[in-house]
Length: 237
Image (tube, rainbow, N blue to C red; front, side):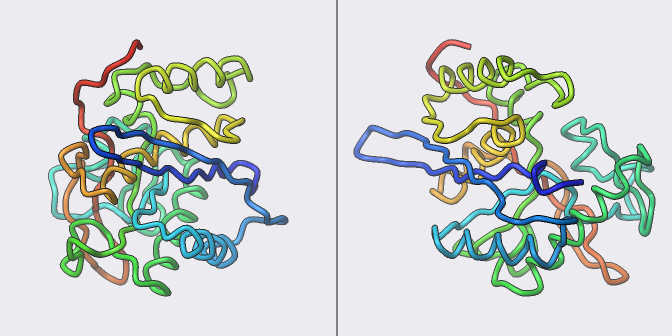
């Protein structure tokens, strides 16, 4: 894992009368060395404070599976969005095993953000309508919900593939892309669209896949993955 593999984008909803639009600006993570949960959480906190972000979307698991559902190998949210990674019971119930490092890092990042800031998870008991939320996203499900073919895997996608996918996204949503150059940055844009709508109060355009989060044995369990709700958009695919 490397900081260069972390895509970050600020997605903003704009409205003026009946005119509405989205813009997305990508950021490079200004950190080096082996990724640190503490350092990344601190930098994200600086960014969201500087830009008054009300909804922070992270493409990674927020917690572990509940032992009390009918889903034996993954969280209900992962089953709902057909995620390839399966987060089971702690401390290492992850499939495929190659996802273990990424999964534990993501869960620790959510813990750090929720412990040191006023962010809450959607569906948590303390999540008032006006609260700032930090939520899990899944860009592949976002592409599908927007009526677009998902961006191919990073290892297979060329620069031209990323550019072509960005053009399709612009044609479908009208979003303006600023400094969005890499696969990870484009995925961050797609993962943040539902969050931008949520922050603007357009909750009818958002779906929460999964089950409410809760604490068990010192960790978050289940929780929602936020993705766009399927709805008609003007523009070509």
